[in-house]
Length: 300
Ligand code: CP
Ligand code: NVA
Image (cartoon, rainbow, N blue to C red; front, side, top):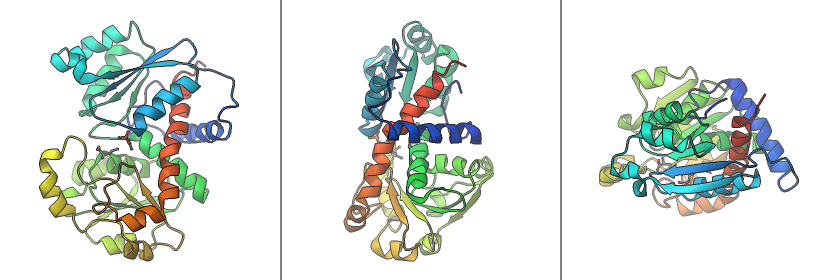
């Protein structure tokens, strides 16, 4: 694996390999002396805010023996119009890998192509692959396997997280239900890009029935702030509440990629009742990303 740009481009074997390695990194944290990133410097180039992704990558790189530099894309010449392909070719002379959070998926693809250094998608408008890999790991950790489970995504069904779930469903044998208003459901071409068992519905209650996992994300993703009022009005009924959880399996997991907006996509009581799972999910970003980095620098 040269880059990690999307779940869509990953094979089942690559996903399984990373998840296996994640378990090793988690179990052995602080006890592994191998430093696969020793002597390397990785750049985090972010055009959007971040708490979890930034810190988990910075800590992960350090634990693997490397160094990181954080660049706010707006402060770089990128912010004044320098081309991505030029930035990529300059940085490639200096860094060993790049972790990029931005808007357009094609921008990280272009960076990967022109830099040639391992490039990781730390969230674009299209996908959030590191998040969903960490989430799948969390489900495996708590329920042994994701195989034949039902994952119900509640809210903006075309958000980056939902799209990564959509592609994951095409690689792993679980059922994905997307409960969203019509306007926020994946359709046509996008839907056909996944070969998974995916069902989209406006009927939230039906989607939650006997689910193994209820998953949600914020209604207003970064970059969509101008649509805030409309999204709040249209996504209003699509939230995770105690009564919704009652429709799912009795041991259903409630998951949230964070940051959470209580009173919108989830209510306070439900969030706190499932805080253990949600914060395990956040912690697992560190372990899964270490596995990704180690995989990207593997030399055989
Ligand atoms: N879930 C997630 O990616 O969080 P951050 O935006 O804080 O990185
Ligand atoms: N869909 C959200 C995810 C945040 C981690 C966003 O893009 O803002």
